[in-house]
Length: 496
Image 1 (tube, one colour):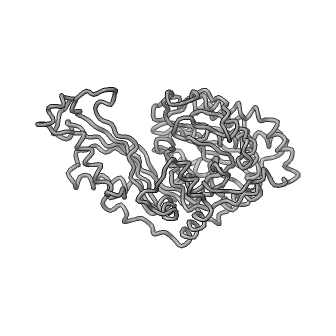
Image 2 (cartoon, rainbow, N blue to C red; image 1 turned 180 degrees about the horizontal axis):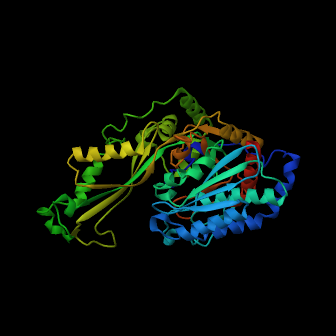
Image 3 (cartoon, helix red, strand yellow; image 1 turned 30 degrees about the vertical axis):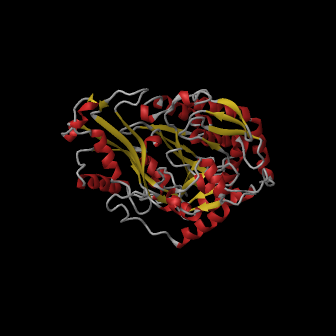
């Protein structure tokens, strides 16, 4: 699953009625829609070229090339000012498109993707092949297809269609992008805090990220916020512990030598209760109680979202702690989590090697809800381990940021509701994305802007093998690439 934990996940799964492809369009937008259809192959080729450029921050692979390609795509789409912004890590991008419009809207893109193991894919992850998928239609398959290059390419295609129709963009755009989202955006605040970027964003009415918001049954969710995240690595070793071996030794020595691997496992066991609830000391001190508004949204979501479809899409039969459907939705939106992403130590190949490993490591992510902060949560994690005799374990924060929240009556959100309704879709208002994105840099001080996601379209497999984005749909309730592009056209004019 994607690091952001199925971005709309269970919150966007439901049994929707068959939806109309499009309500009647305003006459002055018809030339733009015609351009969308005319430029379909061009838009698809642009997306495929983007996918074919690996941009993996965790491996420092292709990031400079990915930045340069993204900057060329922005210039081609009409952005007049496009700059690379240096950080202490990988670079970002700042761009503006001045249409002389009364209103200005902010855009957030990411141009990095997750790592891949090509052996797990049915189609090579960097070839961006078109694949016929039963019951869905034609999809483009490749790393980054839905997270996030497909939706972002759909937005750029909307700009091409507007210009191709000889129309003027109805809003000005301020654009920021990073190449480190998939490692927790450790340097994104450095981009946004640049004086020229701050000044431009302060003119915006809000910031949104293009997204494929349709679940497999056609329902659409509008997230009114997102959880924050702490990504970290825990390492237990004989060298730092002062016990156990400083190099791998024969496993028979376990009778007389301490095990760094077991030391790590025991430490991890203190972080959760037997039921899997977070057990880090003080973790819940700053958790904001669930509001009446959110309870009402969750009640409505529980009525409209299909529990059976949610379980099917996730491949599960039970919710944690055997929670009810309503409780599972509340947990998803409002509870902090402690998750093991990966755990490794010693030999894991075929057969056995009978060693006592000198080192073991775990990758963790902790999801945060208002009013938690990444810095405070990380400090609590370290203090918890030290208090229980695990202070020797190295704990390194590799990325993270705070949660964010936007008001349901913000113009940015109201425009989303109106745009989806124009397509015959009644969106589900969802309290908080269970995954994470660095929207806090926009919603927090000093900008204090509403922020969120928007876009029709469907895809699956983010952070997993066979990731795809729907191009030509054979399912009447799902929208392909051209409709995703048209949805962005409609949204821009609604924002105006």
